[in-house]
Length: 160
Image 1 (cartoon, rainbow, N blue to C red):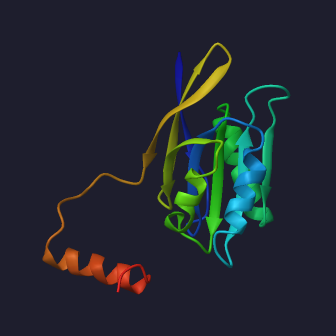
Image 2: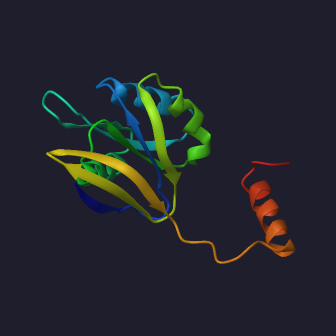
């Protein structure tokens, strides 16, 4: 087995959701789910088909994000995995809806951080083992950090 680390390239204002699914219908169902999740959301989806023609299927409402998702999915090239690139929405706005899509088996990550995907390859097959998301902790939050965290959540409108 060979292990590879695949970097996900994206602009800083783009959030990413990577997951695993099990059916070609995933692309259309994820598109419908995201389009109905919230007003103004921009997204691109790519799905690595694992049988038949084994194509990278794609959809979305933003050509740049569709292309970014396609490129990332093609570099990862692991069967039955999907990549969602988001703008004007945070993963927390859509994650439960994405998880409720019947074909979705699981989520590897949802992040805006720098991201690498650990891929295993064996006998012509590839799978995601995990992700390297962001940076290591640099310490433990103090009282000022707690106050800043609480203020940020209120600034974003997630807490009153």
